[in-house]
Amino acid sequence: MTTPAAGVRKVGVDLQESTDDTRRVVEAIERDNRDATVSYLPGLVKIQAPGRLVVRRETVEDLLGRPWETHEFQLAIVSYYGHIAEWDDDEIVIKWDH
Image 1: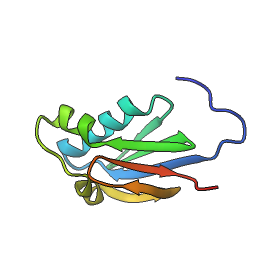
Image 2: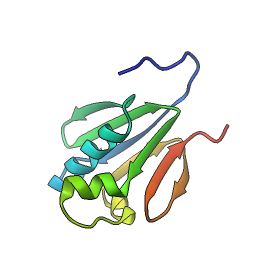
Image 3: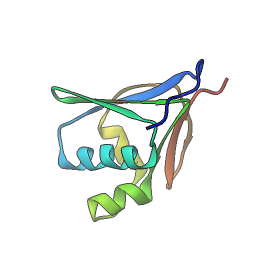
Image 4: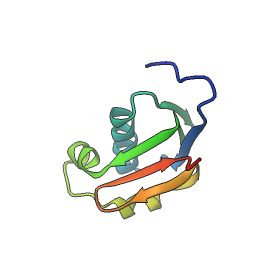
């Protein structure tokens, strides 16, 4: 893991850790966001990254072993910070616009 540059604002998402599917989504986020930090709390997973966080459909599908649609991500989200800059069929990007 690399150290983020000073002054880079973190973005993040908090997910309910209630299903195996959500656990695979967390694994996918970790795989695609090398600078992300993941904290496990009872029933909750907090994920933070400097500047940008991406959730890629293809990575999630690889780990789930089944088709996955990005709208399924909504079922696990408790909260997030940053702006959802992109949300389409292939990926979700959370970042600060400024």
